[in-house]
Amino acid sequence: MQAPTSTSWRVFRASVFAVIATQLAALGHVIGGGQLPDLAVLLTIAVFLGGSLSGLAARRRTGAQIFAVLAASQLVFHIAFAVTATHAGHGTDGPLDTPRMVAFHLLAALAAAALMAGGESTLFRLFAALHRVLVPARLIRPVVLAPAWTAVITNDSGGLRLRAGELSLVSRRGPPLAA
Image 1 (spheres, rainbow, N blue to C red):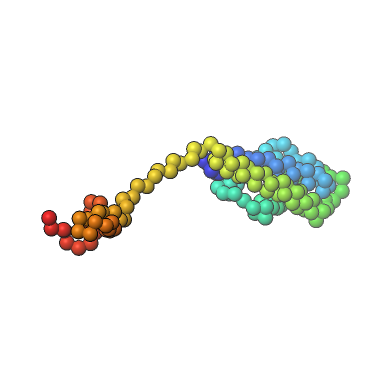
Image 2 (image 1 turned 30 degrees about the vertical axis):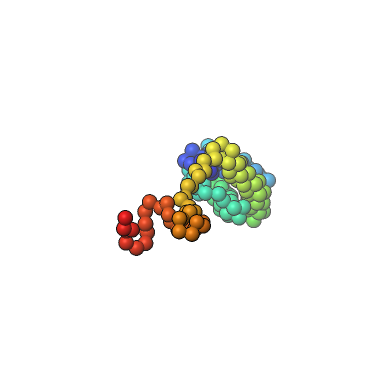
């Protein structure tokens, strides 16, 4: 295996992503002026997010791609937290400052994207290094080729003459030689 893209690794990477995104969403929501969301809401959204993102873990992602997905997930978390807090009857000390809260969600996404891009890069480099160390080097088989020429001593002049393809078993040109 050269990269962590098997099914089990994809699920693991998506789960880590979902847990980090959920924790950051809760932190951004609280710092932005909201209340800590209910644990059931956090777990439900984290499981949904992890399952839906496992398909994106089929290959290595860049920092920009990670940030885009984190930013989108932060906005989904913000909407889910606002809807569930309204339905649950959780009051706040004052009106929610939505722009401020969204800004904190996006700052959390930016910080997490930087950390996760570094982790993604490190994980893929680790797999590449392990692959180079653990997979045995392929044996190089020597290729034996018959010489293209042969040295022949003839009786007529007593000298050395070079003849092409003298020892070749298969003639590639012309009709067969007469005996």
